[in-house]
Length: 276
Image (cartoon, rainbow, N blue to C red):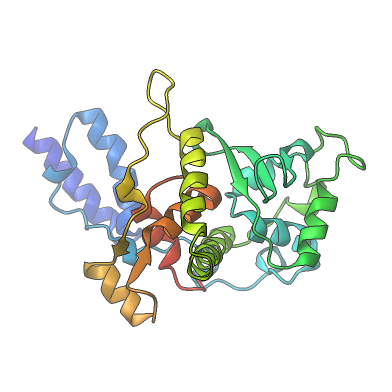
């Protein structure tokens, strides 16, 4: 009713000084759904925009503490593994020795098999920063020295951390995108190989109701993804690219972010400044 919409508009005014537009939208959605009111009927809500999102914890001005300090030796293992795979917080926390799939079983990369967002089983590639970290990760997942059902992180290796893991995930995405684009530029045959690898991963992650893989659309990996509007202005302001190779973005999305949306990969990860 009109009275209910007016009440929700007043609620919006109450929330605005305290929360971002994105958070307010999240808080209003269940209220509107329960009352059968369309979100576009709410006049006082602020419009969300990805260029204004603040996702990383350390971007907010808080006092530096040992629990959010990436240089604290307590978090060394967590930082190295997070920078190798781009997993989310809960996915990292639940890693087990048996999650690790060494190179040669799927392709030339090591993988982690995890149950990701929405309960989906995913296989995420490991892209190490250097050989030393590669050896450390392989040793931490070594089934000859650990029980297969053991959690990788024991005790204080994970508990109590407030690290900006979203920022690390974003940096993994950027590094992965650069890796694929540079390899495609240096090896003309690699683009065709990468398309096949992406199709294989797509078929694992995308299924119809009957269980069959969804179609692998060519517009997901041909051409360029161009930034527009506020995102373009934001990229110019921060000296970021204004367009991205779609195949590089898709590979980054499928293998390192465990989804397949180009817009989400670009706007929430690739165009995020290093400190967010």
